[in-house]
Amino acid sequence: MSSEKFSATLSIGDLNDYIAPSQGCVVSFKANSNSNPKPSTSSCSSRLDKSYAGNSAKLGSAIKPLETEPVKISLNDCLACSGCITSSKTVMLEKKSLDEFLSNINKGKAVIVSVSPQSRASLGVAFGLSPLQVFKKLTTLFKALGVKAVFDTSCSRDLTLIESCYEFITRYRQCHSTTDKKSKLGLPLISSACPAWINYAEKNLGSYILPNISSVKSPQQIIGAIIKNHICQMLYQRPEDIYHVTVMPCYDKKLEAVRDAFVFQLDAQGEKIVEVDSVLTTVELLDLIKSKSVDFASLEELPLDNLLTNLDDGNLLYGVRGSSGGYAETIFRYAAKNLFGKEIVGPLNFKTIRNPNFQEVTLEVEGETVLKFALCYGLQNLIQVVKKIDSGECEYQFLEIMACPSGCLNGGGQIKRKPGESVQSLELKYLENLQDW
Image (tube, rainbow, N blue to C red; front, side):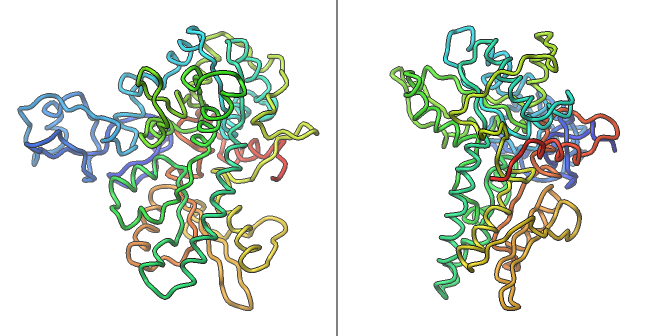
C-alpha cells in the first residue's frame, strides 16, 4: 500500500501505522440515550460522514441506523487517528489554520513564530538547502509578512530534556528506595511530547498507564509559556496582544495546543489566553510559500533572532540528535553519570529488537544491567510495550514513545517525500549544521 493512502498518525482499527493525511475515521459509534455518541476502539475502516445514519451500511449490517441528529465530533472525542479531524480541512480547528495566522498579522497583533527543527529539515530536503539556510530564509519570509520575531523550538526542547532528566532521576531513586510495590509504579517513565500517543493513552489505556507518563510539557508548550509569560514583557506587550504560532511536523500538535491544561489565564474580557494560538504544519508552511509565489531558494538570508534560538558564534545550530527530540539518549546519558558515575562518550549503541522502530540501549555495571531504555515508534510497537507494562513484565525504565514510524521527522504534517526518498535523507538533513548540545 502506498504512503499517500495513509493517515497522519495511527489507526486504532487494524494497527497499521499511517504516515500522511488521508482517509476515513477508524472509530465506530455506540448509541447512548443519555449522552452524545462517543467513539469506541472497535474496528472500523470506513469514512465517517456527517451523519451516523448515512454510514450505517458501511459500518456493518450488525449496526442499525439511528434516528437521531447528525453526530458531531469534538476535540475531546478525538482519538488522534486523523480520519475525521486531521485530514478534514472543514472540520480542522478554524483558529489553528493558515488563514487565521495571516488574519492576525493583518489585525496588527504582535505575531511570533516558533519553528521546529524537524520542519526545517523537511523544507531543507524539499528545496535542497541546509536547515540553517531554511531557518534564515524563513526569518526573511515571516518578517516580510509582518511577523515580529522567529524563534527555535530546539531551545525549549533543551528545557524539556533538562526537566525530564530531573524527573527520571527522582522517580528512579524513589522506586529503588522502597520495597512498597505501589511506590514502584512510577517506572517506566514514558515521554509525553507526542500528542497522538497521549490522546490514545488517555482514551484507551485507562489509569494504569497514566501515572507513568512524564509530567513535563512538550517543547511546543514550553516555548509558548515562555513567550506568553516572559518574552511579552521584554517586548512591552500584554500576553493577549501576542499571537504565537508554531511550525510543527505533526497535525496533532493542533490538538495539543487547545488542551485546557495549556490555558494559563483570562484577559480583561474573560477570554482565554493560550500558550500557542496557532499551529502550522510543514505542509501548510509550504502552501504559504506557494500562495505568495515566493522563490524560497533564492530568498535573502536574514540574521536569526538569537533570544530563543540555539545558534553559536560559529553559525552552527546546536542541540541533541534524534528524530524525535533525543529524550531516551539524553536521559540515559544523564542517568548513567548521576546514578552510576559512568560518563558515556560517543554515540549510544542502540540495538534493534523487533524492527527499526523498536530499539533499546542498556548500561551494565559489574556485569549487571542497571539501565535499560527503549525507543518505541509506531502503533504496532506501542501496543506491544503497553501490554508488557499492563502485565508488569516491562523491563525498561524509560520509553520514548512516538505514534509515527521513524518518529517526528516522519510526522503526518511533513512535506510528502519524492519517490525513492527515505526517512534517512531527512535524518541526514536534520543533522546538517547541527552541533551536539
